[in-house]
Length: 256
Image (tube, rainbow, N blue to C red):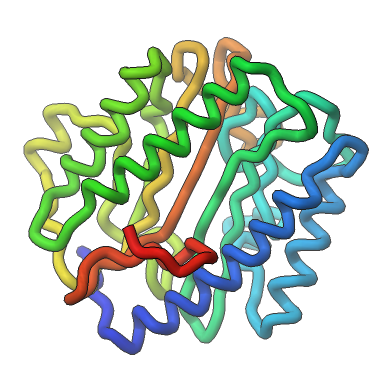
Protein backbone atom coordinates (compact mmCIF):
# COMPACT_ATOMS: atom_id res chain seq x y z
CA UNK A 1 0.00 0.00 0.00
CA UNK A 2 1.29 3.48 -0.86
CA UNK A 3 1.89 5.80 2.07
CA UNK A 4 1.17 9.44 1.24
CA UNK A 5 3.17 12.04 3.15
CA UNK A 6 2.09 15.25 4.85
CA UNK A 7 3.79 18.57 4.15
CA UNK A 8 5.75 18.18 7.40
CA UNK A 9 6.90 14.71 6.43
CA UNK A 10 7.99 15.93 3.01
CA UNK A 11 9.98 18.69 4.72
CA UNK A 12 11.83 16.04 6.74
CA UNK A 13 12.36 13.94 3.62
CA UNK A 14 13.81 17.05 1.97
CA UNK A 15 16.30 17.47 4.82
CA UNK A 16 17.29 13.82 4.57
CA UNK A 17 17.58 14.15 0.80
CA UNK A 18 19.86 17.16 1.04
CA UNK A 19 22.20 15.38 3.45
CA UNK A 20 22.35 12.44 1.04
CA UNK A 21 22.98 14.80 -1.88
CA UNK A 22 25.83 16.56 -0.08
CA UNK A 23 27.46 13.25 0.78
CA UNK A 24 27.06 12.04 -2.80
CA UNK A 25 28.65 15.23 -4.14
CA UNK A 26 31.64 14.66 -1.83
CA UNK A 27 31.96 11.11 -3.16
CA UNK A 28 31.94 12.41 -6.72
CA UNK A 29 34.71 14.90 -6.01
CA UNK A 30 36.80 12.17 -4.42
CA UNK A 31 36.21 9.39 -6.95
CA UNK A 32 39.67 9.81 -8.43
CA UNK A 33 42.40 7.42 -9.57
CA UNK A 34 44.23 5.88 -6.63
CA UNK A 35 41.33 6.21 -4.17
CA UNK A 36 39.79 3.02 -2.77
CA UNK A 37 36.06 2.45 -2.57
CA UNK A 38 36.49 1.90 1.19
CA UNK A 39 37.91 5.42 1.49
CA UNK A 40 34.85 6.81 -0.28
CA UNK A 41 32.64 4.84 2.08
CA UNK A 42 34.41 6.14 5.17
CA UNK A 43 34.24 9.74 3.98
CA UNK A 44 30.55 9.55 3.18
CA UNK A 45 29.75 7.94 6.54
CA UNK A 46 31.66 10.66 8.38
CA UNK A 47 29.77 13.38 6.51
CA UNK A 48 26.39 11.80 7.20
CA UNK A 49 27.08 11.37 10.92
CA UNK A 50 28.44 14.92 11.20
CA UNK A 51 25.03 16.16 10.03
CA UNK A 52 23.27 14.25 12.80
CA UNK A 53 22.02 11.55 10.44
CA UNK A 54 22.67 7.84 10.06
CA UNK A 55 23.86 5.84 7.03
CA UNK A 56 20.69 3.96 6.09
CA UNK A 57 22.39 1.22 4.10
CA UNK A 58 24.76 0.10 6.87
CA UNK A 59 23.33 -3.05 8.38
CA UNK A 60 20.35 -3.13 6.02
CA UNK A 61 19.68 -6.87 5.68
CA UNK A 62 23.31 -7.28 6.69
CA UNK A 63 24.85 -4.89 4.14
CA UNK A 64 28.27 -4.03 5.60
CA UNK A 65 28.86 -0.48 4.36
CA UNK A 66 27.40 3.02 4.18
CA UNK A 67 27.38 3.35 0.39
CA UNK A 68 26.97 1.04 -2.54
CA UNK A 69 30.03 1.43 -4.78
CA UNK A 70 29.57 -0.28 -8.15
CA UNK A 71 32.42 -0.07 -10.65
CA UNK A 72 32.24 -0.59 -14.44
CA UNK A 73 30.21 -3.76 -15.09
CA UNK A 74 28.78 -3.67 -11.55
CA UNK A 75 25.25 -2.28 -11.79
CA UNK A 76 24.19 -1.77 -8.16
CA UNK A 77 24.83 -2.93 -4.58
CA UNK A 78 28.61 -3.10 -4.86
CA UNK A 79 30.33 -3.48 -1.48
CA UNK A 80 33.13 -0.95 -0.83
CA UNK A 81 36.53 -2.44 -0.06
CA UNK A 82 40.19 -2.23 -1.01
CA UNK A 83 39.52 -1.91 -4.74
CA UNK A 84 41.59 0.98 -6.09
CA UNK A 85 39.87 3.19 -8.66
CA UNK A 86 41.74 3.45 -11.95
CA UNK A 87 41.80 6.03 -14.70
CA UNK A 88 38.94 5.30 -17.09
CA UNK A 89 36.68 3.54 -14.57
CA UNK A 90 33.13 4.62 -13.91
CA UNK A 91 31.65 4.24 -10.44
CA UNK A 92 28.04 4.33 -9.32
CA UNK A 93 27.79 5.64 -5.76
CA UNK A 94 24.43 5.07 -4.05
CA UNK A 95 23.83 6.92 -0.77
CA UNK A 96 21.05 6.36 1.75
CA UNK A 97 20.51 8.57 4.80
CA UNK A 98 18.16 8.33 7.76
CA UNK A 99 17.42 11.69 9.38
CA UNK A 100 14.77 12.15 12.07
CA UNK A 101 13.27 8.82 11.01
CA UNK A 102 13.00 9.67 7.29
CA UNK A 103 15.10 8.44 4.38
CA UNK A 104 17.00 10.24 1.64
CA UNK A 105 18.12 8.08 -1.29
CA UNK A 106 20.18 9.15 -4.30
CA UNK A 107 22.84 7.80 -6.68
CA UNK A 108 25.11 8.99 -9.46
CA UNK A 109 27.63 7.38 -11.78
CA UNK A 110 30.89 9.30 -11.89
CA UNK A 111 33.77 9.12 -14.38
CA UNK A 112 37.13 8.39 -12.79
CA UNK A 113 39.61 10.68 -14.50
CA UNK A 114 39.46 10.56 -18.29
CA UNK A 115 37.03 7.94 -19.53
CA UNK A 116 36.31 6.61 -23.00
CA UNK A 117 33.84 8.21 -25.37
CA UNK A 118 31.68 5.09 -25.03
CA UNK A 119 31.56 5.48 -21.25
CA UNK A 120 30.76 9.21 -21.49
CA UNK A 121 27.90 8.43 -23.88
CA UNK A 122 26.41 5.81 -21.54
CA UNK A 123 26.56 8.17 -18.56
CA UNK A 124 25.01 10.96 -20.61
CA UNK A 125 22.16 8.73 -21.76
CA UNK A 126 21.40 7.45 -18.27
CA UNK A 127 21.36 10.95 -16.79
CA UNK A 128 19.08 12.06 -19.64
CA UNK A 129 16.78 9.12 -18.89
CA UNK A 130 16.51 10.25 -15.26
CA UNK A 131 15.76 13.84 -16.24
CA UNK A 132 13.16 12.72 -18.79
CA UNK A 133 11.47 10.61 -16.12
CA UNK A 134 11.37 13.56 -13.71
CA UNK A 135 9.82 15.75 -16.41
CA UNK A 136 7.19 13.05 -17.02
CA UNK A 137 6.26 12.91 -13.33
CA UNK A 138 3.13 14.87 -12.41
CA UNK A 139 0.35 14.79 -9.87
CA UNK A 140 -2.55 12.95 -11.50
CA UNK A 141 -0.27 11.26 -14.00
CA UNK A 142 0.57 7.59 -14.16
CA UNK A 143 3.55 5.55 -13.13
CA UNK A 144 3.76 4.15 -16.66
CA UNK A 145 4.51 7.64 -17.98
CA UNK A 146 7.69 7.73 -15.90
CA UNK A 147 8.69 4.23 -17.01
CA UNK A 148 8.00 5.05 -20.65
CA UNK A 149 10.16 8.20 -20.47
CA UNK A 150 13.15 6.18 -19.26
CA UNK A 151 12.60 3.48 -21.86
CA UNK A 152 12.36 5.95 -24.74
CA UNK A 153 15.68 7.58 -23.89
CA UNK A 154 17.43 4.23 -23.46
CA UNK A 155 16.11 2.92 -26.74
CA UNK A 156 16.94 6.14 -28.58
CA UNK A 157 20.60 5.58 -27.65
CA UNK A 158 20.49 1.87 -28.39
CA UNK A 159 21.13 0.82 -24.78
CA UNK A 160 19.53 -1.96 -22.78
CA UNK A 161 17.62 -1.46 -19.57
CA UNK A 162 18.21 -3.50 -16.43
CA UNK A 163 14.76 -4.99 -15.81
CA UNK A 164 15.52 -7.02 -12.69
CA UNK A 165 15.68 -3.95 -10.43
CA UNK A 166 13.53 -0.85 -10.07
CA UNK A 167 12.95 2.37 -8.19
CA UNK A 168 10.59 2.50 -5.22
CA UNK A 169 8.62 4.60 -2.81
CA UNK A 170 10.58 6.40 -0.07
CA UNK A 171 9.51 7.55 3.39
CA UNK A 172 10.04 6.17 6.86
CA UNK A 173 11.21 3.03 5.08
CA UNK A 174 13.83 2.94 2.36
CA UNK A 175 11.70 0.69 0.16
CA UNK A 176 7.99 1.44 0.06
CA UNK A 177 5.27 0.99 -2.52
CA UNK A 178 5.06 1.54 -5.40
CA UNK A 179 7.82 -0.11 -7.37
CA UNK A 180 9.04 2.29 -10.07
CA UNK A 181 10.09 0.29 -13.15
CA UNK A 182 12.15 1.70 -16.00
CA UNK A 183 10.15 0.09 -18.81
CA UNK A 184 6.53 -0.52 -19.75
CA UNK A 185 5.08 -4.00 -20.05
CA UNK A 186 1.67 -5.63 -19.75
CA UNK A 187 2.07 -6.15 -16.01
CA UNK A 188 2.69 -2.45 -15.39
CA UNK A 189 -0.24 -1.44 -17.57
CA UNK A 190 -2.55 -3.81 -15.67
CA UNK A 191 -1.33 -2.44 -12.34
CA UNK A 192 -0.66 1.17 -13.23
CA UNK A 193 -0.59 3.70 -10.41
CA UNK A 194 -2.07 7.20 -10.29
CA UNK A 195 0.57 9.58 -8.91
CA UNK A 196 -1.04 11.41 -5.99
CA UNK A 197 -0.08 14.45 -3.98
CA UNK A 198 1.98 13.30 -1.00
CA UNK A 199 3.69 10.44 -2.83
CA UNK A 200 7.50 10.29 -2.67
CA UNK A 201 9.41 7.95 -4.97
CA UNK A 202 12.98 7.19 -5.98
CA UNK A 203 13.43 7.10 -9.76
CA UNK A 204 16.57 5.19 -10.75
CA UNK A 205 17.33 4.29 -14.37
CA UNK A 206 19.96 1.58 -14.90
CA UNK A 207 21.29 1.35 -18.46
CA UNK A 208 23.76 -1.10 -19.97
CA UNK A 209 25.93 -1.14 -23.06
CA UNK A 210 25.24 -4.88 -23.42
CA UNK A 211 22.16 -7.04 -23.03
CA UNK A 212 20.88 -5.77 -19.69
CA UNK A 213 20.87 -9.26 -18.20
CA UNK A 214 22.36 -9.44 -14.71
CA UNK A 215 23.86 -11.86 -12.22
CA UNK A 216 24.67 -11.61 -8.52
CA UNK A 217 28.28 -12.02 -7.38
CA UNK A 218 29.47 -14.49 -4.78
CA UNK A 219 29.20 -11.82 -2.07
CA UNK A 220 25.40 -12.11 -2.55
CA UNK A 221 25.09 -8.34 -2.97
CA UNK A 222 26.92 -7.02 -6.01
CA UNK A 223 24.80 -7.07 -9.16
CA UNK A 224 26.81 -7.29 -12.39
CA UNK A 225 25.95 -7.33 -16.06
CA UNK A 226 25.91 -10.95 -17.20
CA UNK A 227 27.99 -10.16 -20.29
CA UNK A 228 30.50 -7.87 -18.57
CA UNK A 229 29.21 -4.80 -20.38
CA UNK A 230 29.46 -1.33 -18.85
CA UNK A 231 26.54 -0.13 -16.70
CA UNK A 232 25.38 3.22 -15.31
CA UNK A 233 22.92 4.09 -12.56
CA UNK A 234 21.42 7.47 -11.62
CA UNK A 235 18.79 8.16 -8.94
CA UNK A 236 16.80 11.03 -7.47
CA UNK A 237 14.05 11.02 -4.86
CA UNK A 238 11.07 13.16 -5.87
CA UNK A 239 7.96 14.37 -4.05
CA UNK A 240 4.54 15.04 -5.55
CA UNK A 241 3.22 18.22 -3.92
CA UNK A 242 0.46 20.74 -4.32
CA UNK A 243 2.86 22.99 -6.22
CA UNK A 244 4.26 20.31 -8.49
CA UNK A 245 7.06 17.77 -8.42
CA UNK A 246 10.07 18.55 -6.23
CA UNK A 247 13.42 16.79 -6.55
CA UNK A 248 14.42 16.27 -2.92
CA UNK A 249 17.98 15.13 -3.66
CA UNK A 250 19.03 17.88 -6.08
CA UNK A 251 21.55 20.10 -4.30
CA UNK A 252 20.82 23.29 -6.20
CA UNK A 253 17.19 23.19 -5.08
CA UNK A 254 15.70 23.18 -8.57
CA UNK A 255 12.38 21.47 -9.10
CA UNK A 256 11.73 19.29 -12.14
